[in-house]
Image (cartoon, rainbow, N blue to C red; front, side, top):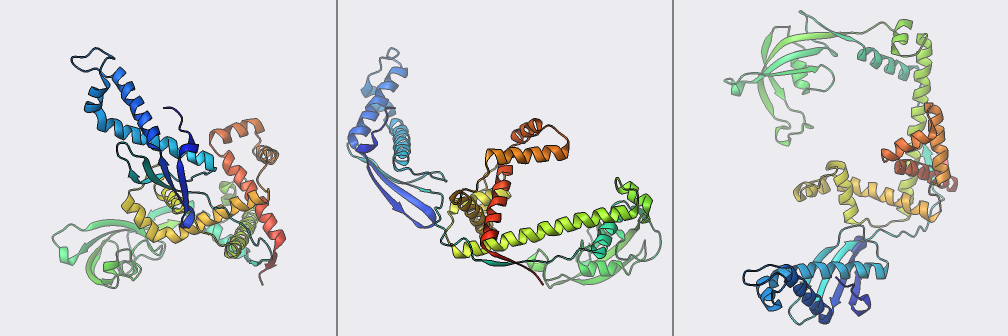
Length: 421
């Protein structure tokens, strides 16, 4: 199709809310008619109809036979071409697909149409410093180390069947449960650990009164936080059978345990490593909290609206992955998670725009240096690591991590960070 001369188009741009833009474009009838005639002639050379030689079908016959189809194909091509030309001419960079609205087109008239799209927000940061945030003080000591060691013991423990006694917290139980109102139905089997909130509290409490092989009838009340809203606060009559009970036998906490847990010579060496890791995690958590609080104040000082298409795209990535969500499911996601999604998108945009405004984006040298550090720790060749990261599509993520680190160092330098307590 010949290129449309954008200077011959009538164009107006309306700026809506949330970075919505609507172009109203009028294409002179002469251009449309010329394109239509060209399409008819081209089709006449290609189509084969009974009674006519190939390539010799009269244009009038093609017009009568294929006119409506030609018009539809013509509209799609001309509208698409004009839209792209106007975007380029005006320097507009949509972040969403153009949505064609009202189209006015009749024979021997100009073609007029509207097309709407979102553009990326342009933020003018009025304030980027002078904030005051508190860094949380996260206590790490023997108590936290003991908790980690206890989890390690549980992971390495062995479930042993017990034929007597009543279940206690931490025991694994096999039960069958039957609603007395449905006594004709078979009891449904379940297996879970007591005390891990894997079952309704009243059900767990009832089970702890039973001996292995025993059964009884109970009245249970559904808690107020149960997923099924209709059952909240209601009661039911259940018959519960305790078919099995297992207790977890955990290994002794000694030097042998430490050696099995990893490359440690003693329990004290294992404890020291756990303490070191916990301190590092607490520092990272505290830093993350500082970053979040700085971002909250930055957003409060520089409010801006978020395009709906970016929020929808975020929800798609969270719930649908590569597949497009059905509109009904997307509407439900907007209702349930729209606020959190909008905040997440705002934070992403603010980081990106401020890093660009302050020239804090990751450089190639910084990315190379970071990869060399990673390669040295992993004992691998930097070139090989770069190739693997590139193949896995993780270079962009690495660049963003470096950019965010530089940005938050800038924000902290412009503000006051106080230690809690």
